[in-house]
Length: 116
Image (tube, rainbow, N blue to C red):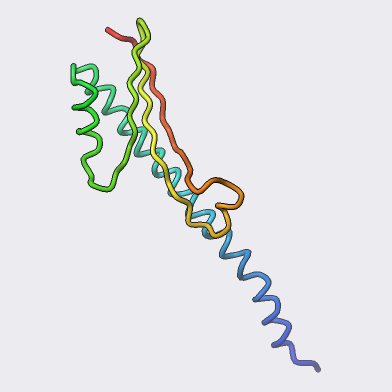
């Protein structure tokens, strides 16, 4: 009977990079979903702050309370409606993904409310 250890090693070496790539992709996907959820929650806060009469500068200070957060806030008034756009960028950790996609993923949330 032949020794099967060499065959198992070759199979392991072939499967390991694919498995690691999938794991990193799942981690990146989870980070994007988590950032999207955080932006959704902050968008709700921004709408509440705006309806309470806070200025856009005050709202920016309130939502960027963490030192590492760099959330971009746009408040655009068009007649009867106000468009609130929150966006942030996230750098993927998946190796080689920067060759397919730009270095950063832009995650954004848009809210349109009636201006009262």
